Length: 171
Image (cartoon, rainbow, N blue to C red; front, side):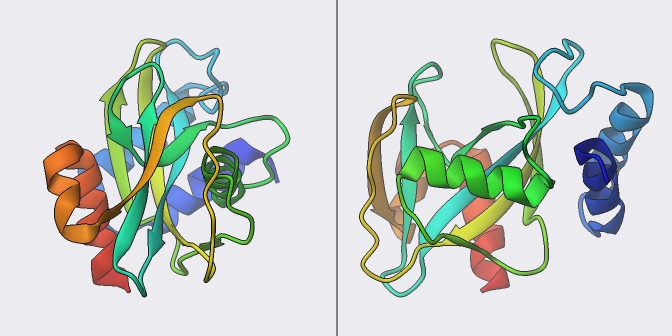
């Protein structure tokens, strides 16, 4: 199965945010290249909020280009077998933490936002960090930091806050 087909299947099974979910599906139906950065009309991206539920904290990256505290994530790559695998790859690369585990149940939220390259149709997952995990900053980040759940609203935008709320509801 292609990554494009996997994304469509994941979105068809996602049961929230109906209007946005349908917009993503329409995008994929009308853009065979809709998974790739080269699609200037927008492209599907994958991200994952890295959490430590035992210590009630979340790992955020200070994005190098956007200069905002965000969850880990980004563009899909040709080697990604699934959308979930792309989210896990991005979270692992950007956090430096091996052994992350995606929460079961598929995506937690969808979030569409404009970036310098195009519209991102982000499919957002959540991943738990293993006990004793040590983060390592990547070249894509200006900083990488754990924040207690109750401090996220003070540093991140509403999309990250909504993602954390949805993630905590799933735990």
